[in-house]
Image (tube, rainbow, N blue to C red; front, side, top):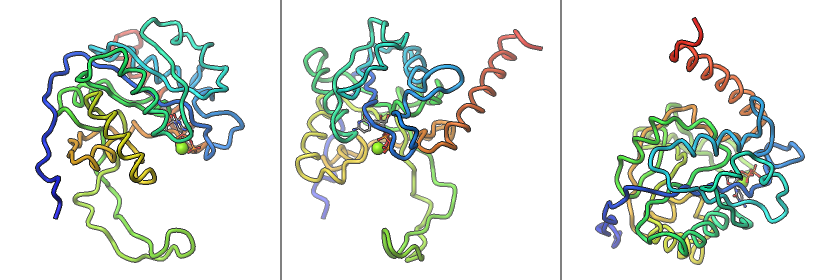
Length: 254
Ligand code: CTP
Ligand code: MG
């Protein structure tokens, strides 16, 4: 029996909020020889797109970016000069980086302040999706309903043959941002990391362990996480397309 079924949702109080950006990864799957957040994308580093996007979110108080201890690139970014942008040193895993930022924020913001955690590697989140997330319940995340048929394999590594087909109706693919009140998320992440660190793959998984049921907010497919080299090419094409669209909409291009 799930004794946490009726755990309370925190009271919605957020009128302003902070963003946390984990950016301390090394980009192993990209295999580029430098962390993927600093690879060029449409004329500037990937992370510059993400930060400039976030700085336009309505009602944003500030951003805490978790960067690697040996990072020498961040300070060169234009966004790094913005007084709303702060940095902390990240940790070994994404969750450690997020926790470092939450602990920093705990000393500077109200415990009930809403926090939106957003991957540095997702530069293409849309303003419309951010508005939907801000309007959602106090714990919520952007996610995409699965569109392909979902197979479960018999074995994680050795045997790629099918064990079963999962019912797709309730399968969602989690994206970021993921939203929660500062103290709620900080406590959930600390407890989750202490009890089952391998299960904490995003903020929602820590909140779920603490008995919350974060709201799934349907999001645009363009908010994919840049992970492999092909993702970078796709993001570049979408950014060029988006710029053309914006030019047409603002009447600067016939
Ligand atoms: N991240 C982080 N600290 C870590 C690991 C990851 O802040 N110790 C950040 C990454 O910089 C990225 C986000 O978390 O913005 C999502 O992680 P992921 O896509 O897995 O990035 P990497 O860990 O860098 O990539 P890989 O897993 O391929 O090494
Ligand atoms: Mg990783």
